[in-house]
Every structure is written in structure tokens, then in C-alpha cells.
Image (cartoon, rainbow, N blue to C red):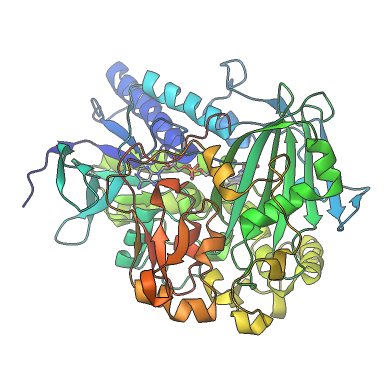
Length: 570
Ligand SMILES: Cc1cc2nc3c(=O)[nH]c(=O)nc-3n(C[C@H](O)[C@H](O)[C@H](O)COP(=O)(O)OP(=O)(O)OC[C@H]3O[C@@H](n4cnc5c(N)ncnc54)[C@H](O)[C@@H]3O)c2cc1C
């Protein structure tokens, strides 16, 4: 048995995203206000004394793994830090104009009206990477301990299955699993409450959900993946503060998808494409969809003469209201995207992530005062969420994503219809008929495809190195780094399937759905067969593989701390 250091804290937040950082910051203030009120006699009861709050983050720094659009609804940030503008929050611009375009293959048709969910007046364009780093500084100023390069690798439970903390990942293990000279065992961070704010498809959230059946009676979570680049334009052709959303090309009518183009400061263009991870075509490749989006005449004209600076990809939990797991259990709470708080109709989750973090802080504060960390006490978090503005917002769009299951046009009809019904839907559009995305993928034979040649879907798509790029070029721009001498963190539980059934049935779709060229089928010596090669050092931690693999045999676990992308300015 390995000797491990155990560190006792009061509250440990796993993941330094907007949800957890807001939670940690809010908690410090609640505790401080309580202690001061008790000391001055304004409040009865006992002071809490010093409360040790830790935030662990797998990235090399706070924000390194944060990737978003992002147009931020400032509602929650205003509640957390009413003077966030004066305090110097890194904001690119207020949204000055909204464009909504329908793209056919050759044309861009601007809608005379912007659909209400895509109206962004009063919102801010932000780099969420920068905003998160800034929130991290605010936390540290308030006394929160932040530990970058510390992935939460395992949940810790007591004999009654109560969560008692988290074990961080070991460092210095070689690819054979042996200890290197720099070996350091992970630490057991013991906490009264552990808060998971891992973002979409959190690896610990997945373990916890399975073990405690937090998703029992809930609809399966469904996801999308956003693939994105930052560009530097040669002139002011796209103004700072303009927000464009697109529908149509290049998604086929059966696939949920759409593009965004946001004007940041200094002629930086933020451009990306979202593809629903409940697509049918096994040859679909979300990275290729994005490249086709950029090759549209309207978009390529915008990018002409510009320079691509950065690349990234990340999933989005789009299931909403019906797919939210139970968000509390003994000793543990779920916040932000890993609890499913994102509003997929607006493609906005920053505001609800911040708010959920704050509500978690309030529930934890009450638990600290009561000295009770049981599920019964922590259920208070659920009550706070239910009575906050988060739930009415999510209820209104509860059947949004389900409509797109029947294709783009019925999806749009359903969206319009729900404005009238306040989110109610029947029959075809009812969310209760949701399927997990990986079950929706059809086989090659259903499409009459012969093998996995991409030309069958992406006939004519070329990577010209100017507007369109292949995956490896793009991944280079994600500044990904992983020590190559470590165990592979993408666990494929049965590689036989890859070389046999999957070749025939789906043509190894991992090679396509991964936006970072991690999965590659290579020749397996003289037998004429192919085998799976995992280029794990390319991994951008988007989690698409864990979600989309049709056999559900890919398990994404945290690699050694500090590995992964570095999304500066994204
Ligand atoms: C492409 C894209 C576009 C988007 N556009 C918008 C938009 O325009 N507006 C908007 O409001 N929202 C948008 N969103 C959604 C928004 O980004 C999220 O809702 C928000 O970031 C959720 O915050 P979070 O704190 O829950 O999780 P995240 O922001 O995902 O942060 C989670 C953090 O936890 C860390 N972590 C994960 N697992 C572990 C572990 N086991 N150990 C240690 N650390 C861990 C991660 O590295 C990361 O730093 C978009 C998302 C994407 C992907």
C-alpha cells in the first residue's frame, strides 16, 4: 500500500472554473461576515473561525483549460461582484450589435429579426480564460488556496459511502506504470464538503454519479462540442462588439449545429462551430464541420488575409432541465456544467455556473454553522437552486433540444411553439424521449458508405493552410502539452472491438469525433489489419470521446497534473 499524505481542509472545490471560483469566493465572504457579526455581538451563535478552502485544478494555471464562446449574461457576476467593471474584470466589449444569419451553401441571409434567445443586448463578449484567471486572483486575495496542476483523480468515501474528500493524481509515473525519480504520490484532501465543478462530463462526476446513482429517474445527458479558433484580422472589417450566430450550412438538416463569430478587441475574431453530439452520420467530423463553415464564401471573405492564432475544442452539456442529476449527496455538491445548468437554447452557462457556485456556498455556509454535512442538510442547496432564477430559466427551455431530434426544421418549429407555451411540449418534442447521443449514431451500412473514406461525406473539403487547417495544425495552436512518459489517460476498455466490430459497423468514428487527432487506426504489422493508436499527448480534454464512442468503451481519466491545452485568451 502506498503511503499518502492526507491534508484536512473544510471545503475542497474540484475544478477552477467560473462555478467553483465563484463558490469559493462567496463562501469566504459569508464566513467573514458571520465571524465579524458574531464578534461584534450583532449575531448570536458561535464564530466559525478560520475555514480552510481549497480549489484544485488540473490545468497548469487557472483558466488554462477554460474554453467558451463567450457572450456572458452578467446577471450572476453582478450578484457576486456588483462593481466587477470598476474592479477591472477583463471584458472585451459590451455587445453592440447582433446578427443572425441563415447560411445556404453559397449565400448568407440575414434575418430581419434576431430570435429572442440570441439577443445579447447588455451582455459582454469575454475571454472566459481571462475572466476565470481574474476570478482566481480574487479568490486568492480572499484567502482561498488554489492548487493548479492538481487533478482530482478519485473520490474518497467512508464506509457509509459518504464523500469525505478527493485524492489528487500521482505524479512521476512512467508509461509502463513504474515510478520515475520525480515520483510524488497524490494527496488525500479530506473535506467536510467536496464541490465538483468539473465542467461538462467531469471524470469524477461520472464516477460519483454511477456510484450514488445520482441520475436515477433522470433523462440521459446530451452534449454538443464546440470547435473554435481565434483569428487576427488585417483591418477593422469586423467591429468589436458584433455578435453573429448562424444556422444552416454546413450542418445537414438532421444534425444540430450552428456557428458563432464574435468581434473582440484589437481586430481579434473569435469564431467557432457547435455540433450536437447526437448526430447520426458515422462519418461526421466536428472539426471538419468547422472547417467547412469557414470555407463558406461569407466566412472565408471575413477571414481572408487574417492569421489563425489559437485553436481549441470543448463539450457543452445541453440536456438541461430533465437531464440534471441529483446535485447533492452526503458530503458533496455538484455545480455549473457538471450539474447541467447550461441553457442550451441561449448557449449560455457562465451566468448559471456562477450562480450555482454562489448557492452552493450559501448551503455550505449553513452546513458549517450547523456542523452537519449530511445529504439531509446539504439538500438546502437544491432548495436554493429551485427557488433561484436558474430553474425558471431552464424550465422555459426544457424541451428545446429534444425538438432537434427530428431535424432542423421541426426543431425550429418546436422552438417557436415553445415561446407560446412557455416551454411545454407534447408528443414528438417531449424531452422525455431523449436518447444518449452515442446511441443515435447510425452504421456505415445505413448510409451506404463503403468503408471510412471521408470523401464520401466531405467531398471537396481541402485544408489549404490559409483558411482551413487539418487537425494537427489546429492542435499545435492549442498549445497542448503532456509528458509523453506517463500512462495513457484515455482508457479503451476493449481494443479488440476497435479492430473488428467497430471497423465494420462505424468505421472507427473516434478518428473523426475527436477534434484533436488523438485516435488513429494504424497498420498492425504484416497481418493486413489495423490497430488503434492513441496519441494521448494531443488531447485537449474536451471529453468528446468519452461521450460519443458508440460502444461506450472509452473512459477519460485525468492525466498527470498540468498536462493539456493552454487556452490563453480563448
Ligand atoms: C464552445 C463553447 C462555447 C460556449 N459559449 C458560451 C457563451 O457564449 N456564453 C456562455 O454563457 N456560456 C458559454 N459556454 C458555456 C460555458 O463555457 C460554461 O457553461 C461554463 O464555463 C461552465 O463553468 P464551470 O465552472 O461549470 O465549468 P468549466 O468552465 O468547464 O470549468 C471546469 C474546470 O474544472 C477543471 N477540472 C475538470 N475536471 C477536473 C478534475 N478532475 N480535477 C481538477 N480540475 C478539473 C477544468 O480543467 C476546468 O478548469 C460555452 C461553452 C463552450 C464549450
